[in-house]
Length: 199
Length: 199
Image (cartoon, rainbow over all chains, first blue to last red):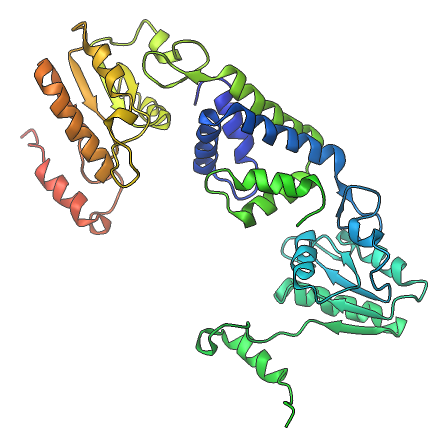
């Protein structure tokens, strides 16, 4: 046990995801020796994030207002919704500049092991957004793993009766990767999804 | 880039030691979804640690007053000082309940690669503490690695002329460990330091 609030800080840091007791200790001593201005800025930003940030009422992404920056942007294509698991997926897709529609953040993926079912995700909110018929395509961009695939399969079945285009992101070899290092499932998917090249 | 202060929080967290961009992102979203009371407590403890904590004027350990809890404790043996690299080493040794003397925290170890020399450590402060002749033994408990050994060797040479007992913690097999899993250096040390058992 450390003296005074140092132990409190180590305890609080140790509650954060991915930070074990050793990391918590190291960070605490880093902060103890750091410039007080830097530490105060971190503390302020922590308070501000809870005061200012919320989740977009429309898509579930992080937002500083009722609706997020993307949902407020009138230049986005209203006919396409890209369904993702987490806000970080929105950031990753935005970085590609390939997609000009809107998003729908589920807040996770179906995982029987972790006890997460469709009711724990923002599925009902997605169905409500599709009710007026303005959306013509839903791109299922959940992760290409067990949970993400299960979620995509579930959503595809839910969306089937609505008669809109439901697509899934392509699986295949990572660009710039080495074929010999690809795992067999990815390589198998790359074969399945092979494209005809122009002659 | 995330909207608003979320990105600020990710940036601030990413400056902490051992937290990369992915971890910073994960922690930020954990905090975004966490109970505001918990986040506020973390923020408060951060501010408090800078306001309340300092380093002990005598031994360099963390302290809430001018001198740390151990240096203030009149029951400690004043004739022995245990020299360690970091405050976390004090905590580790206190846990053993084997040592009743006081500590001296160097604030690191000699490391030419990282540009840390004796002048960057609290060596002068150690020499000052030994000046009045009350201390009879100095236990060098720096880490049993390259930097720790170099520091112990340096200190042993500095302390030699003072004519006091200078000792080093024993190296050997970890208790409860398996001999076959010990690395060869440790096993070699265990042979060197072998004890005669009572008949």
